[in-house]
Image (cartoon, rainbow, N blue to C red; front, side, top):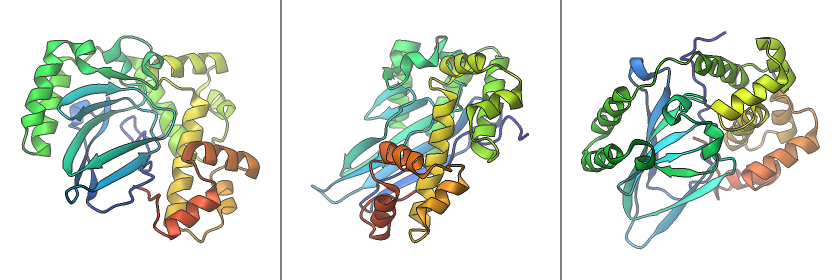
Length: 275
């Protein structure tokens, strides 16, 4: 079994950059925060005056702390894809927490903020506003990371062994191809289906079935973007989908295009690419 600090989110999920001038960078957390924070990220763009663009994302099962337009917000797990529009030049900085690792900060079931965005000051008071002001004025990403990590250290919650358990389960969901059903998880970790469901609703905010399916769809989208001529049925089978109609339904619901249409769009560079 991988160490608890192993990656618990995929590297895929960016579906629709249609224009140049957009970049996504990822930065590791400090070692003392690596058990709670998956990574920091920075998106930036620089477009000609008057030009608009957009990016579509298929979210991970993670809570993010996001600085956008001078405001700091806590973004719960989003179950649907969403599109972010941008123009001229700008940047958005975020802290991606490991699945389950934000509950000790929130001190409430993470399902309470699923599909929701919470102003950071609602959780941390005026200190969050002061942090947003300092981060907005920060010249570089090293300064952004330093400021937010110092803030999190000051509020670091007591150790919660359940966070580690959730982390181990999520690592298995992401990396272990022998796990294709939730029953495989309950057998592997020796917990009942009801306990597993409650654990994920409280710590992750979504069900283990949703997490497993989302990771597989991330990989499917990335594979089809990378190898547009590869038969999508082959990709589906490789990821544990043996019912093609099930795969088509899940993929279309999540991405908004059928697997064939998605691959064609990637081939023509009209839309989705992976990141």
